[in-house]
Amino acid sequence: DTEVTQTPKHLVMGMTNKKSLKCEQHMGHRAMYWYKQKAKKPPELMFVYSYEKLSINESVPSRFSPECPNSSLLNLHLHALQPEDSALYLCASKPGLASSTDTQYFGPGTRLTVL
Amino acid sequence: LAKTTQPISMDSYEGQEVNITCSHNNIATNDYITWYQQFPSQGPRFIIQGYKTKVTNEVASLFIPADRKSSTLSLPRVSLSDTAVYYCLVGGRSNDYKLSFGAGTTVTVRA
Image 1 (cartoon, each protein chain N blue to C red):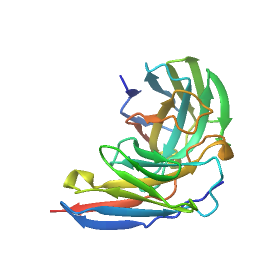
Image 2 (image 1 turned 90 degrees about the vertical axis):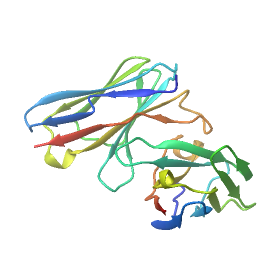
Image 3 (image 1 turned 135 degrees about the vertical axis):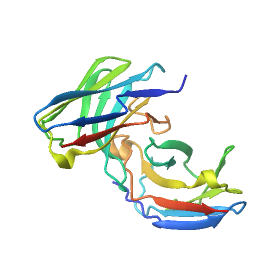
Image 4 (image 1 turned 90 degrees about the horizontal axis):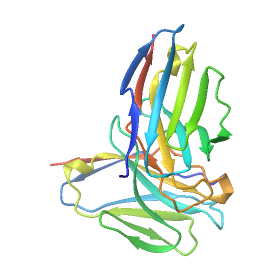
């Protein structure tokens, strides 16, 4: 099973809402990632978790709050977002953080629209 | 951080070979070169990775010259389903093993 799943597939939320994105993998990977991708732009790294601990935060605004409750699950909690936060949010995982040759597996993404 | 430069777009026809060259002049000694493919509204998918010389798998070949300042992804006999954005990434210990995506190359395959 080389699959990363993400739910929901689509999400529409208002600026005052609180919502969460979920990512799951059962490949035993210990590194998990959140990316943000705007239309016709490349993915931009947001957060990296290694062994359930936050390893890298790419200066992401605090209205995005990641959480890794266990080795298979990664959440992204959203609160007080802005319309410019509308994007495709991608989750990815790979076996270990400190490896140049491990392949990073991406999920299909959650299409987020902030009204 | 090794920056990559690749053509913005390329057009091809079914059955042709497509070669995409990526420049990475300041690649670090321990960096690897990785290519990903992305279809609209999907996550990127790993295609191939290499360190030097030539690497081939069932979908592509990767050519890396001795100075490693560039690399060429070769897609043999493309079909319409190969229409996608192709990203060249360079990294490893020098950038904390992060994937830093460049602008990518949009490849359009026509019948």
